[in-house]
Length: 98
Image (cartoon, rainbow, N blue to C red; front, side, top):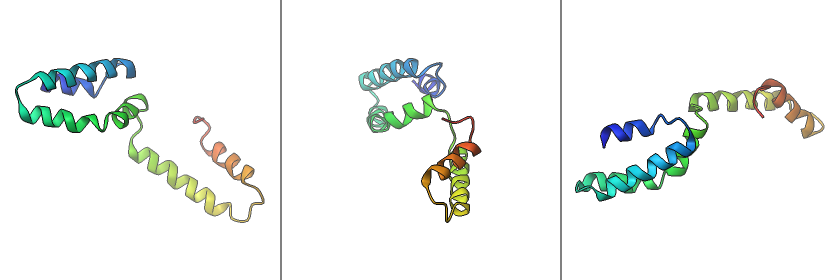
């Protein structure tokens, strides 16, 4: 069970992760280990966030950097007449992101 749980954190695809996740939860529920059952029950509430991490493997440090850069642009944008120019500046600073 431990090796299977470790394998869940590095799947090939998000759909592959979802099926492996459901299988692991089923095995944990069928096991006789009460601590494992409780752990699986607690993880069920976080599956959407975990799936998001699998689909978009971006670390929080990267997100904080992006948020910080947007705050700097916002401070520099004080006095702009419209928000369209502000968003254009953000898109200009992050050309690879949609």
